[in-house]
Amino acid sequence: MNGITISNGGTYAFANSTIGYSNMQVECLVSPGALLPKRAHPNDAGADLFCFEACEIYPEEQKLVDTGIAIKIPRGFAGFIYNRSSQGKVGITIPHSVGVIDSDYRGNLKVLLKNIGEDPYRIKVGDRIAQLVIQPIQLVDFKDTWNDTARGTGGFGSTGN
Image (cartoon, rainbow, N blue to C red; front, top):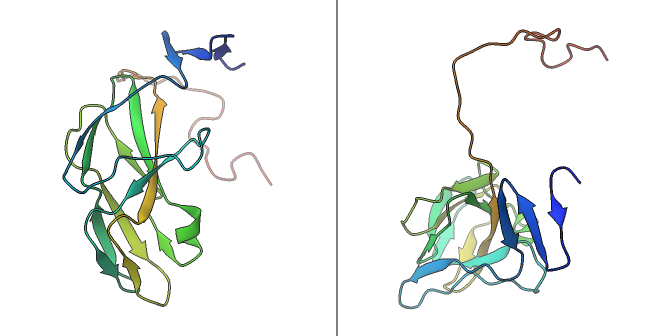
């Protein structure tokens, strides 16, 4: 199964570590009035992130929206911030598609949102603004070598139609 082994105990092995998919807890620093990330349903991959300070985003404007929380992601994991599908329907998007949170980042989580719609978008304190997914990652090293292949530098369309 692509290097992932599922056992009866609800764990899987990935990159020389075993992860329980229901028991892992991530430490958070929560500002007064902020909300912890929360899943709408127990098996959701993403946990909702909530707005900490009300704001309005005008058409073609983008704003960094504070969640009021900081998280301690364990080494070997990363956090990924994704847009909510309901926001996409009204023209609110994350300009770079996804935000990446490294395990050693300790600042407040902020979500860059852009209004590509035609109307101003109002966000109230406590509104869901994005979803956070924490996933195991493979930490790799890079070295300066080059291995020629039959493909070479052929990219888009290099193998024909």
